[in-house]
Length: 88
Image 1 (cartoon, rainbow, N blue to C red):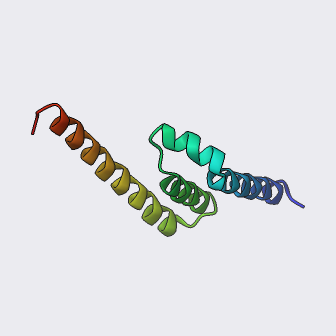
Image 2 (cartoon, one colour):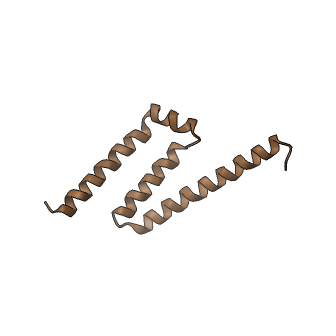
Image 3 (tube, rainbow, N blue to C red):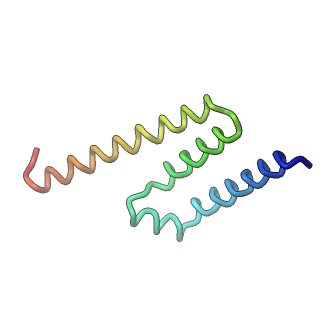
């Protein structure tokens, strides 16, 4: 087995572990308490995996989805805080 194959196999194994961790309810609860949406985190991890595997098209699409969702949620959160503070 070449070093590149071994390296890629190790990367794939890490992403399998990361996916399992992100789907773990304890981890999900901890991330949620920090305002992290685990579904978006999984998509972000999938995007990175796709990029590392050379699938730039899928990576770009997934990263775009994650960026749009985070930005939308951030704006909504800021709006909500503004409303609570009497700011419109």
